[in-house]
Image (spheres, one colour):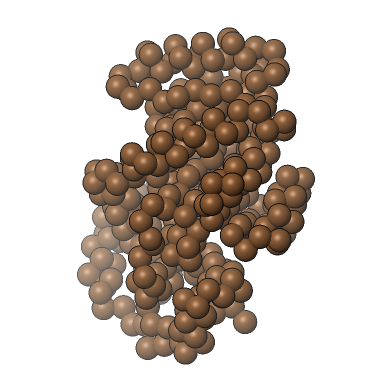
Length: 327
């Protein structure tokens, strides 16, 4: 897409290290995912950066662990950014409560820490289409550890793989989530499993269940299983040690994973453009009514829609300049 002069000025301020420009560009990307091509105007991230996904059921202690990870990574001279993805609005959905509020206060006093809450905008998997682009923007600003905290655990939560090179699955004793983990496949794709609240009863049983589940799978790679009591900062350094070792192996640079990410990005882009065309095509309403009345088969209607819309993808009219900067 084309950018206005205001948009381009914002990019220049970003290049100069202006954190307000960074914040406004994040808002731009979050509100207008089709503006992600502005990343092409920025220098690639410096080598050594990584996006790390932290996922787990509500109440497992993700935000508490994040607080410890931020402090520990800063002691190792990393610049740390956190994207906390919530199911509701960042203003009304509790994005800056409890540990989040404490982290925000730390970030305000340290320019090498950046924290931003985002809404999932109802997207299945808990990640909006903008999260990948925003994480790449943060890497380009010089934050070399971008931590993405996602919501919930379930099959759709596999979406964390779209944005994170390293995935940390957090669990805790006494929740009975072992069936859910196996359904989701998260224990097979996680690079690191953290049992938080390890001072609670049942930690040994939980760890054995995880080992049994991993051993029953066909995966040759078995992730480390660590115990933490994040509220007391116990075990956090070991988590960082393992994360740094995993990052050094760069699992995200596997070309097959990159191929998958390219296709996923293409699917999102194609879907958005098809919806834009569909909004201008009244015949789709007629097709929908025919399917609802049982006069047409949904698969035939879908094929007809694609035959009509796909040839128009490259010929759709777009304004020469479109400003999407939030005023």
